[in-house]
Image (cartoon, rainbow, N blue to C red; front, side):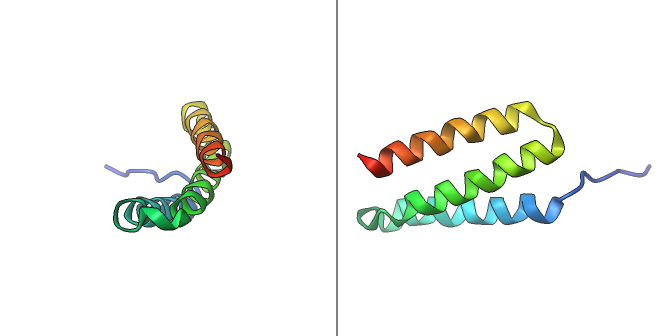
Length: 75
């Protein structure tokens, strides 16, 4: 059985690693607010992955999360 991988796996892994860094920053040093930027970067990368994969659910979820993090950063 051959399992075919989706293209741009490296980008999905980069987005995932950035998301883990963001979550770590939010948990361990929330007073720095640096995690907001990492969440925005990670979700922007996931928006790109969702577009490239033509996965509307991934795309929509990450657009909404990016907006939420941006509003949180501005407030």
